[in-house]
Image (cartoon, rainbow, N blue to C red):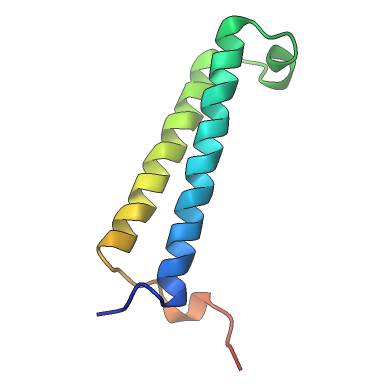
Length: 84
């Protein structure tokens, strides 16, 4: 069983943290859109529901990556550069 110090698990945690940070940024953008900040409708043109879907997708992806890390599922070894 792999230990959590291996690069596969570190990569899973870094990816999950990145998706969680992006989901938090989108959540604040949703709050700003709801309050009617003038710059945000120009940045997020289109349907409000698409931004909510993107936020939920990022949360689900981060939960999936955290779950893979907790279950200690290793990534394929060829996905990492060879360390010499």
